[in-house]
Length: 433
Image 1 (cartoon, rainbow, N blue to C red):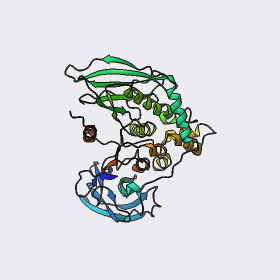
Image 2 (tube, rainbow, N blue to C red):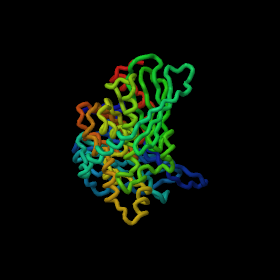
Image 3 (tube, rainbow, N blue to C red):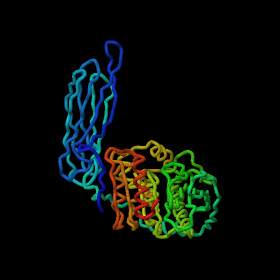
Image 4 (cartoon, rainbow, N blue to C red):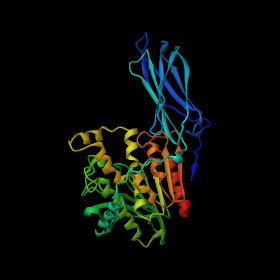
């Protein structure tokens, strides 16, 4: 296992612009700007190594400002130290810096928050910066129930009992396209119809295949432009063109059927991905030793789950994965939708809810991933915190697993990352374009 470092400047600068406004004598409003940096190269440091975080406060208003800066630490890995307050005074058109030193005493991540309160605004300005240490050592306790593997064995058996009834419908492609395009439909768990878009090279041959799976509510569509690969852009139930039997709206997938593990949305959604693998493995033009599954966010969780439940996966690619380490996820994020769902029925509780979700926590599944795995995360991701991603990734037992950390990225890794992954797939599968 090793870390692939991104190309960054010598000092990582995560610039977060937050604006407050001061009234000038002419009634105009001018901003106060706060930026935050650290002296780490890529946001990852050694355990017990001091890191200096610097907040720069720029006063572009016509008046001097006074106030306080309060530094806070938030982490599920360590007991946060007491907050630290510092007085602040900035003359107009000037800037000052405030520094805070912190060290991680163990494996994990920590959010360093700088809160600025000034005489010019009633609302504080808050900026955050995340640091990590020894990320390969992050291990959260497993939450599997005693019947966890029996549940998934029975679920896969029930899926196998549903005739897939694969159908391919030719679709018009661009005149200069080098691929043939089809809409594919199939019957999945619970006899639910699911669909996707299949792109096949026009020339004869046997090719590597990529199963692309969606983010939360995403509509997967053909990608085009990737030669010498078979690409199946698949929509599990409730997504894209797979809404005949399961509606996509409202986008409440993670609370649908949550009262029981048997009816929970993700039981069917995970099994849909296995059915998509059944389709690819049924094709003679697919190289059965070169099949990848790739997704981001919810799709990253789908990738982990598919590689865990199906040994036919030869390469697992999980970007900013969701569906990982639920216990810490809800400590690090807050979603009113989940609070409302639990409060709606007297029999519901956080304990029971987490018990149901534990069957679909990829952290509890990932020890069964044996194929090569690539995970990529945004260090500043507030939707899928890296702690949860590594809690799943570090459980993978496959010998070849790598990760890439984008220090200044959040819940989105950008076009260059997509191009990087396509190149990684072609390199590993030797699919020369």
